[in-house]
Length: 93
Image (tube, rainbow, N blue to C red; front, side, top):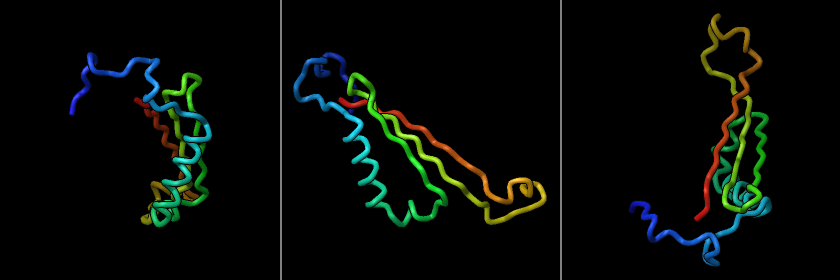
């Protein structure tokens, strides 16, 4: 399927989903619950989730501490772990 601007819903279209902080939080919590095995592998997992003021964009940030399994002298300064962060934006409708 491709995007056809002539068939896109208008901004006032009542069928267009509206995102809220609560709905974005609930979606992240549901995803983490459904994928508990994967989420459980990360140490110090933390996340934030927000919706934009116009209710069209969700932003999720996930942060965790990882410890590479093969620790060499190159990675020794990070022997306590390496903090990684990922940010994603998604548009509704």
